[in-house]
Image 1 (cartoon, rainbow over the protein chains, first blue to last red):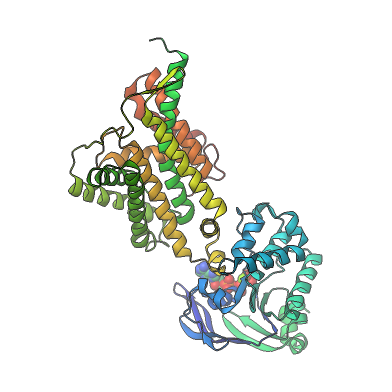
Image 2: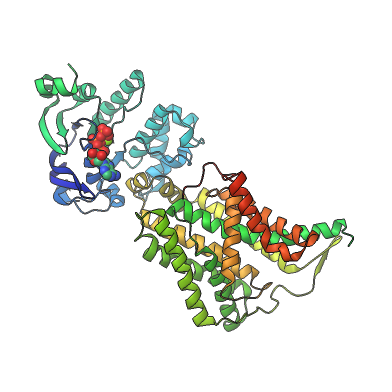
Length: 234
Length: 294
Ligand SMILES: Nc1ncnc2c1ncn2[C@@H]1O[C@H](COP(=O)(O)OP(=O)(O)OP(=O)(O)O)[C@@H](O)[C@H]1O
Ligand SMILES: [Mg+2]
């Protein structure tokens, strides 16, 4: 579904991605794990077109999207839960969801999807008229996920959806991710919480200072000594 | 001089009228600042462009004031769009000071071009709002004041509707709040920027067409108007939309009261006193939330 081949990315003179390759097959959860500053968020930014790549290629269903503008990505049925949630703080919860369907022409369809989301996340329904900035961290995370789903994506990029959440909420978020997979959504999941990520991932990559160093099935990776030492703190 | 109740009401109406115009200019500063993170010191010149465009259209196309108003507003908006495209977008990632200086440069260029086209003589509108005062109860008002208040009010109402009720307006706000997230939603953030610059310039332009008939129209008129709009925005709390409106109205009233009670020679000084006072004692303004980032 998603294929990233040898991409490089720089901030100014500093090369942050030094030839990243990864594949996400349809219907899978693929985890991308790595330490702080390894380049996980940068990889997602490169895929979503926010940061231009200097070389390499990115394709979705064999369509080249390497030079596609970020605001055209929705057309490729790709959506994203960005790092740090990035809800629109001074817009209402409902408006945040509405903008999730900004690029969808059929507004009736958008409204139906929003209804589904409010059904699925009752906390958001209670707060529909509230400014998103006044929500708790957990609620904002739910909103970021719901907002990304309004466009009915086939591929979802998630950047540390469990960040800053209580253990109970982390569990809930991971349940949701598995749920989404079961609904047929393909997921590329960036996580610090390597243990839980590897538990639900079909395949996983470890990124270190801008390079993929290890990859394998979630199960193999959990058993891998290097991974256990470095990322599962065992 | 004996000042009675009806005089006070008259001063209030006159102050409100000018205040509404300052609000429009201040809203221009605010919207540009929120969306593009620029304090646009060419905002006053959008006001001037509105006035000269309006007058030119009025004199050459049959003398329809409302048509002149709309097209002058659109003309100023187009200039704002061009400035965004050429200057703001290019300098997007430059230090704020560079951007501010660039806007001062734009202001100088626009004034010079306007002077080449329209000359440096003061021009004037015919009395488009009618020249005989109307009596409402105990007060006697120039109809122009009522028109200005009415048109400014409608403009602000339309603006509010745009931001609160339309998807494009919400997308613009979203872009101002989180550019990356907005583009992930499929919002073309460059269109949002362009729209923000156009709306800001258009509001300034409408302000210019509104005062055209009560003042002289000349190519330097943007300087004072720009400073007053800026003072109004700072007074209300820079970056706050309601703040810009409230700040403009308070400034207009303060000016008119001091002109009537003290001396009309001090009319223009009021804006600067307020500006300095607010910056010293309450830099967040009346409705501002955060210290302005410059
Ligand atoms: N806007 C930027 N300008 C300059 N350097 C940046 C920028 N964003 C990230 N970097 C650098 O790029 C490298 C990779 O950053 P990135 O955000 O991709 O890391 P990450 O793996 O997502 O880390 P974390 O787990 O902390 O979120 C880091 O060294 C970071 O300092
Ligand atoms: Mg990150």
